[in-house]
Image (cartoon, rainbow, N blue to C red; front, top):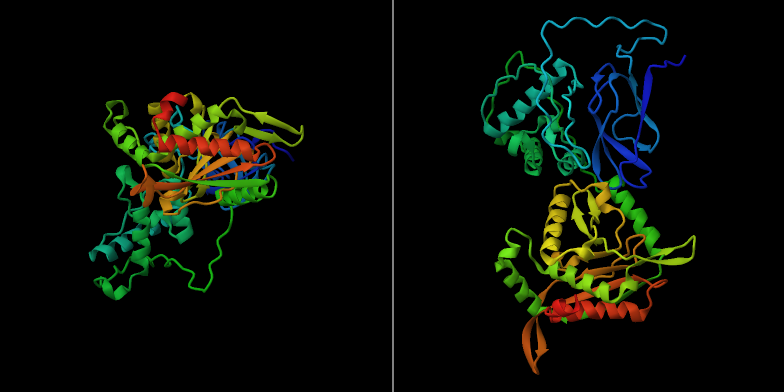
Length: 467
């Protein structure tokens, strides 16, 4: 029969328009007590990895899906008995009274690292351990054994203590998952006990290293059997599941490539003066502490070109058969991260001064590298820049982000022989490529935009007269 006190918590849409998310980690188990605002699981969407807080108090009755399962938005993932009693063995069985605790529960300090879109809960919460004390002891002794092999020293067996979730950022968790490393066995070296990528690689190296290279240490008689070694695929092929960001990116690129008729135009331009201006701005006290590089001036040049040719900043409404011209620019910057390619955007970039644009670019890049980009930051982009030059590539034919009309690819900046003032001289040169949706951008409009960007980068003083 149905228990009226049981509440079903459904997978929310943590980003605009998302349809599914993968459960990466459960922080609670059936029988655990939860409070309003307590994080119960970590999920990965097509946009980012986020932690989900439960919206009510109670006792966990059931987890509907195991870790690693992709669940549709709107599907119940956890059942909580809000009456506060422990889950009974049968529906009609009375809930046993909770046993009195010999010692008062110790409330842990507020959680330090939080993920995108969620802050620390205002009320103190308690996360109960997923594993038994015996399992915790085994994990800690296995970690001590790894450290013992690294240091060539005997490590005492760790006492049985309450388990806590290892601290690591989402990209590091994904790396550990891909390599088959249990974060509980990794020795952290980051600030505040956070596990870094280097720590994960060190754990892998410790497992793979031949035992004869480590000093032989006799195991205590009472020590439990060491944890099973991490298994690695030594076959000629490795299959990588496509999900999360990579799955969403693949679907979006296929949809874009076969929906919007792409046209790509190219121009090679002398950016020597732009590089000189970058060096001057670095010395300007107005830009102290800000990220100043060629991408900053390229972004500003594109914004000025859009201002001079506003029809390029548009989208195609298939249902209404209309072109929607945007009177704002949410400038996307393609970023390669451990989770895959993401394109966060700077909201209302057209209204920002050059120092403000530099600050926004710096925040965007830092957040993406740390894996903290929120789903909202990747929504509603209008035009994008992809800097393939950082990989030493001369140029490319970029694919449009769905719903956008144009994307500018920036190639590597290299010294090349160039005719300058009637003489061949070594100049700093790059190649720009502009892809656009030919349904709403014709060749004339696309050419004007690309030519304007090139002209500004060749003579950056035009930023003043054209802005």
